[in-house]
Length: 531
Image 1 (cartoon, rainbow, N blue to C red):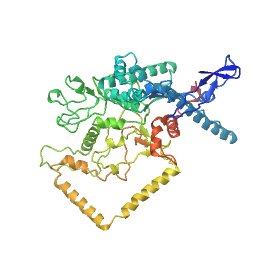
Image 2: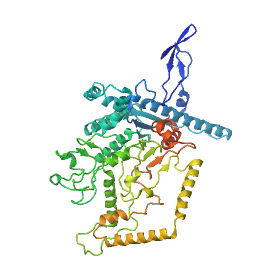
Image 3: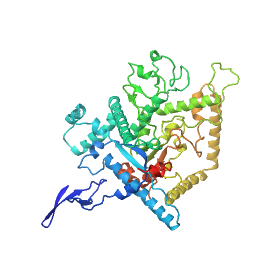
Image 4: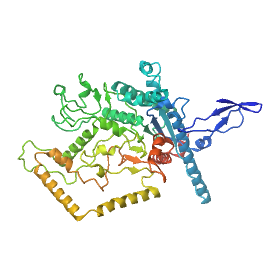
């Protein structure tokens, strides 16, 4: 609030906090005394909505300590949730009023008002980074006093990632987020006791590092609710029944019991030191966590997510690939016998399982990213065999409400790209094609000769060319067959200029808002359920 002079009159004005890196001359609002007539922006739209049918818990990412400061123009998570809630309500009500006008002209019954969606921010930074804690006191004491603006970025933004990579603080952050979700869910249930009975749904959105936290929370939920361990034998590092701590092999059931495990508890099996097939899809924690969220999300959305980077650091690709190999062997009964002369010998299936069967306990999972966001990473390549070439990976789908609507300029760009690829193919000489065919025949013959001695290598190479040009379906997100979705670029869009604001623009992007509206609408509520 600032004091302004207009001639001989003094007035108080409230400066609105705006989002963006370069915000000049933001709108101002004059305060008044008394209870005169006034209107709040968005109040009419909010009152026009129907019953509350969906609750979305939003987990913030890195830098919340900086964005929450008053001298920073970027909005904090609670303000982003307020703005997203207002934008979604405005769009829903505008569409509903247009439909009402059409029904009035056609003399048809008016449609029901759109459902209400609530966004609840989950803020962990202010609790983990409390000024009174010894961690922040020590960090302040070791920070140099020079270039304070740059050091503030390091302490308030980058430091969040370093904390999450530390098992003790990773556990504290996950515990904090899980506790907040439980408390807010319980409070919401007391206010709306019939929400679940009437078919209400709960979902999770994670932005930036918040998406990694959401992934780990779902991993812990999976670990505590799904007790069935993968099938295998004692030589398989993913599943070893019995007490194998003496052999140095850690499994889902024995890892948390080990006192000398330097990595602590993980939501996946850990192989021996000499085994290349080891890793984890879940967080590395000092001990096993038993507190879980009280619901299975209707959908989980990652915005600007570095989950792919964290899974790569955890060695999850090898684990997912081993799961795929075990599922393929179980389906086709291809586990080799000890007797090499067994009849018939094991034969690989002509249509092998391409995608890993790994899944998380969520109705749907969407990894949404801007193509110019420097923090975002893909997830789907980690669910494919390790031997798949980069040029054979399925491209991410373009984000649209129904998954099919692609803008005209994006289609035109795809046509030009495909035309360039075809031109390169037709420009190859006959000699080059013949040489490539001969090399392929030689490689195939080499595979057949080395089949018995190098089964694992053949398994990897047998996937070459089996993905390119084909539709793939991933089991990771339940009913969503694809995971990676990229925002459609603009007509005039520079990658480097867009990279400046891409990571902070998800909550106001029209494509993201339309996608959330489409996936949270429901018609299961009756008119008498309106509260």
